[in-house]
Length: 90
Image: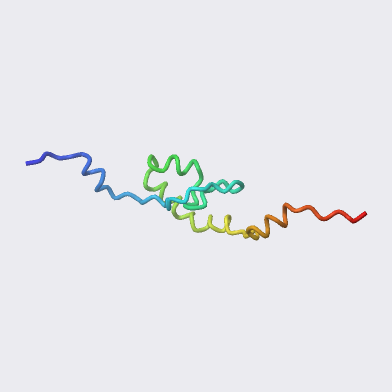
């Protein structure tokens, strides 16, 4: 008969899943991951956080999406922002 394995308890814990979607890009201004919407600090501490703290963060994630949805026009917007107006002809 096999003895009690502590690892089995770890895998059977009722854990709150990570919101990570493997799209790890931190927005340069908002400083949130564009995939999971967590801050670097939250991502770093996630595995050590109590379930209650994780749940509080999960509850705030939908509201964070609006911080990242401002559209800037893609390639055309970048070209427009980075272009210099033509100088007058001599």
